[in-house]
Image 1 (cartoon, rainbow, N blue to C red):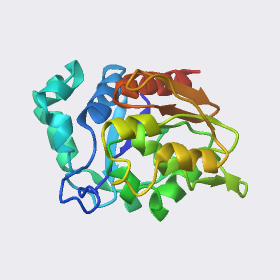
Image 2: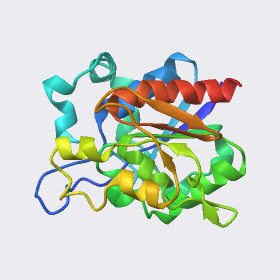
Image 3: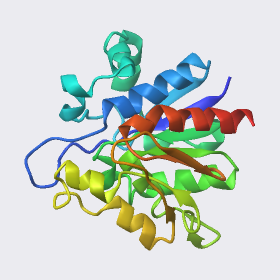
Image 4: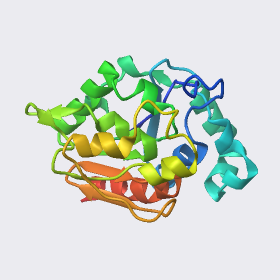
Amino acid sequence: MPNILMVLTSHDQLGDTGAKTGFWIEEFAAPYYVFKDAGCHITLASPAGGQPPIDPNSAADEAQTDATRRFEQDDSAKAELANTRVLADVNASDYDAVFYPGGHGPLWDLTDNAHSIALLEDFLQQSKPVATVCHATCALANVKQDGAYAVTGKAITGFSNSEEALVQLTEVVPFLLEDVLKERGADYQAVGDFQAFAIQDGLLISGQNPASSAPAAEKLLAALSA
């Protein structure tokens, strides 16, 4: 039974707009049930521990999926989510892989988070797969291996500039993820806006947007069984 760590954001403010953000429910629920249904043991963590903030837009009717509806009826999963471990207290050696769900929150608290960077570097050092989806690919931006950025020369995806423009947050986010990944020398790839797309390059697995959450999780499972 693989042990999978899922790391969520603790950040709930959408810049200085006064609006709330956090993690996107689908990007948590879809991978959670891919792992659960495969018999994995799942541990949830976040920078602050406890209940991570849910992006209110991801709770809107039009954003619901089979996975989010399943989560809404799952009291056990809700209890797990309400009691995430503090990120600084988890160690890569205790898990077989890690998955970072997105939402806009990670841009603020997981890009430069020293505990997150060290954790991801440890996973890669131990040759364990790392998966991210949507904005959470920002968590890889400052991760290094052998003195170089881990994403340099790697096929990577994440929320695209055009998708950010479509949700009208280009001027709100602290940076554009696609731009930063390209600046780090990543081979950034994407498909049409909001279409499912997940890619693997070595130990790094990434999904472009909410629809890519389950495909990214499935690639992580395949990497574990390879």
